[in-house]
Length: 272
View 1: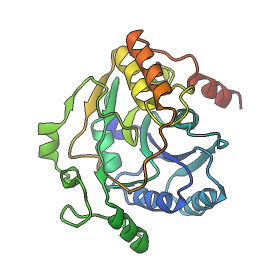
View 2 (view 1 turned 180 degrees about the vertical axis):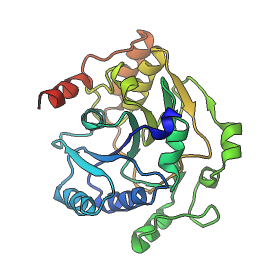
View 3 (view 1 turned 90 degrees about the vertical axis):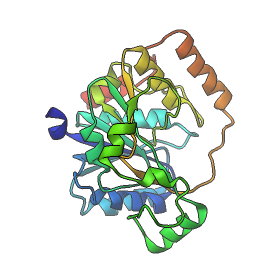
View 4 (view 1 turned 120 degrees about the horizontal axis):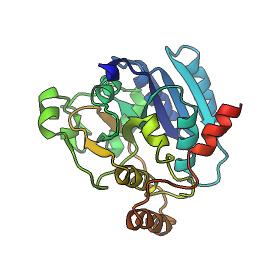
């Protein structure tokens, strides 16, 4: 099956939390199937994050790239586009830099990949005290039965339950690019994320809206591709109203393309 042999790029979006990123990267090395490349999409972190990546790269069993942009506020859409444009692999798996991965994470995404499909994975929410404990112990393996898991059912890995509960649901409910995957060519055909999104919120939903408008499907993956989300305070949402307007316009106009997207970074990579 083509999906089993396809090359994968793991895109990790991060901003000024090197302690979390270090644990996430260590969990990537423990994957039953390794990604072909790991690309850190860095939205303006300081030098401490660069040092973590450089140290990790020394013994990493795959290619590691650090894509950085200047800190001009929350610009996750743009840095993701830059990282995806730099990927050599045909399949993109995306997480945030505070998501510790189950050992089968990459394998699960690959096993469920299909052309013209966006996969939405879930997350296990780690409590505040559990997160403190993790940083003290450097824990990156978790049991379904241990304390500190706020939505424990999401920690259950099961092929049977995956087949029963996973499904295609072509709505924008529950979109979270802290755990997703899609073919790179499917992103390119809708011009990736919209770089005009600044500030937290809806840049991910807007991208998926265009993908669905183009005839794609959204597959909700349950009891597979498990990731453990470290506790942190919520991001500021002062620009959310403006981002909601952008999302609504895409929905109302049935858009499948954004004018300011990944294409300019693809051109830059081709020219360099």
